[in-house]
Each structure stands twice: as C-alpha cells, then as structure tokens.
Image (tube, rainbow, N blue to C red; front, side, top):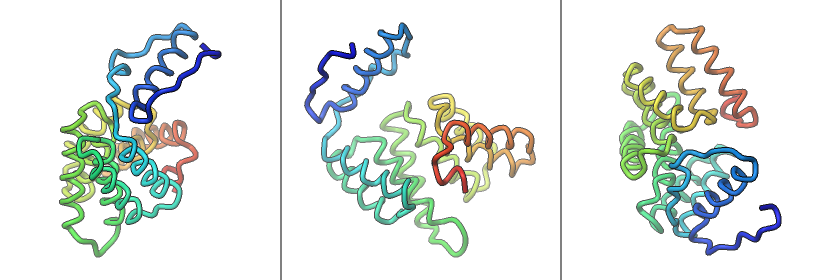
Length: 196
C-alpha cells in the first residue's frame, strides 16, 4: 500500500480520499463504514474555493471573506453540501452580540437546511442549524436533537461538542456540559474557537 501511486483527476479528490482511507484501513486491518465509500465527485473550483473559505474562517475568523469563497464554491457547484453548511456557519458567526441583522440568521438557517437536504450525512449542517435554534430561536431541546445527530455522524468535531456543551449549559445540565466541553478540547485542541 505504501509504495502504490494514487494519481487521480482533481475532480475526484473526495473519491481519492476515500480510496486512501480504505487502503490504509486494509493495511491496518480496520473496517470502515460503508458510507465512507460514498464520496461523490466535486468540481475542483468548488473544492478550492471551499478550502480557501475554511482557511480564512478557521485561522483568522475572517467571516465575510470566507463567505465570499463559499459563495464562489456554490456558484461552481450548487450541489456541494459542505459549501452550503460552511456558508451557514460563516453567516451566523458575526451575529454574536448585539446588534445584529436578523436577516443573517434567516439566511444561515436556509443555508444549513440546504446543506442537510443535499447531504444528510454531513454533520456540520446539523451543528449550525442547532446553534441557530438554541441561540436565536431559543429552542434548546430541538437543538440538542440535532447536535446529537451531528455528533453521531462526526464524533471528532470539536465545534459540534462545544455547541453541545453550550446548549446543555443553558438548560442547566452543567455536569454534562462540562464533559462535552472537555470532549471538544480533546478532539480539537488546536481550534481557536474551541479554546476561546
């Protein structure tokens, strides 16, 4: 496996990632879920714009610049769910504090719902929609359901655990909130949003 060549068309980068994961798994004698094989081709421009947006959002908190890259990603491939959910996240983050434009909240909700509709197996959409539900709509119980679904899909998402922790805290479930926050730090200790 280590000596093999893995050259593919850039449009099939997700399929290549899946193939590499399977090769590593096979060489280590691990089993991956069947969903791991379901990588669909992605437009290279859409993927590049998505990655540029992630870089800006995760390293600098440059939400407006990140939004522009996510919108360019969606313009290149309107069916690319990760770009929709990332756009939702970049749109909702500047709404912390007062005053904020409630249109941003409505837009973020629409983007998150679109991402979930396009790919119900992509955890980020559930995390962002849950964040909107508990922070802006004050529906923490419904938000918890979405967070639990997202964490079921991706238990390694530090922001998902952090949002889960915050939601539990507002419900007064402080011991569980503390455990979830510690889990967020454990799985994503280098993420500046988790360590704020």
